[in-house]
Length: 217
Image (cartoon, rainbow, N blue to C red; front, side, top):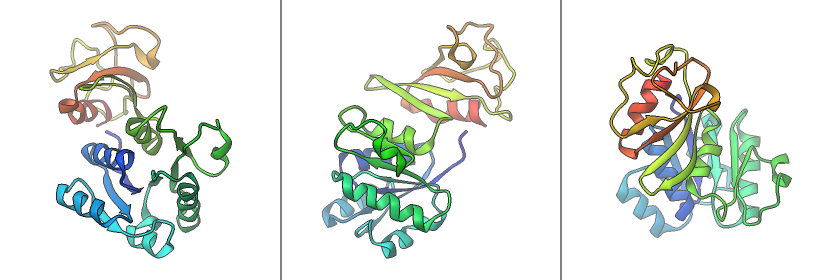
């Protein structure tokens, strides 16, 4: 399984709160920074993430959120300029932090000079935000239905299924490996799950962690 990441979410509106919850459900450590007192209280009551009330462009607030040791920060407020500022301040405060900014206009790669990933809600939403934050090892490709994820998962060298074919692997009910290695064709019972190769997997939310444990270790 992808190692647990320390992630900061700046902005807990619709996209930010859903992203934080999905990341927490995947086992990542999530810290939310939000300026609205009512939203902070709601998140605290639901207990899916630790939350700090404050302005995420304030270095003192980012320091309190643990930005110096964080693996990634995603600025997901409704203001593009504020999001970019949060990411740029965070990059100054932390070596190697992954920065993701929500934008309000699709301007191609223009902002990628300043951040590692962008989220355009009209095209994406919280699942694309998760992909941008975590990186390429585990990606949600699309919502097929409200209850099913189509994911691309790279098999880790030390994973329980590494080197085995699908005849030997007992996947949990509610999951299905769809492709051959590196997504080059439709999978079959003879498909071998090779370390370092990626596979398309259909997963119901209730078994996501079990599938990731099998394929990522």
